Image 1 (spheres, one colour):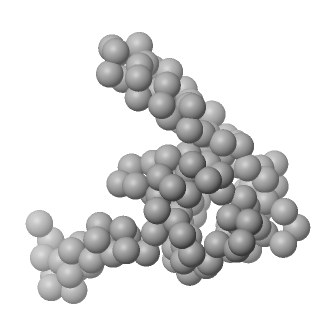
Image 2 (cartoon, one colour; image 1 turned 90 degrees about the horizontal axis):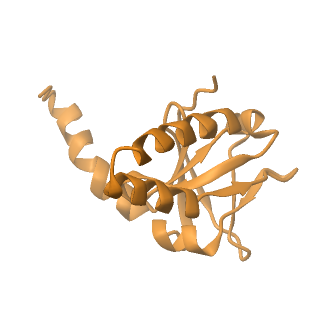
Length: 139
């Protein structure tokens, strides 16, 4: 199973593409799947990891109407993507809008996926946790 870590700063080009760091590209040689994800970011999944996510969503869908609607929403906003020879990946306009991606994009390794973040959203979510780390607060 592919594992991802690290932080990279990139920009969207005029066609709405972002460069995937070379360190992340090999697991996506068969393409990948881009989805809306928690906290307003996008998640890029390898084909195998996406299959696992689909299985989990199918299980959730059996739990009730709210989870069924969440599974529908997740599936309807998921897109298969290809990484070109230059490492560029097109991000559909709807997903760029969801994540607030306009120019600068943080490309982050998030263990079992790659996440794409708007810089301001990332700072809002993570800076309080980073402050806890620097202060030595463990709980």
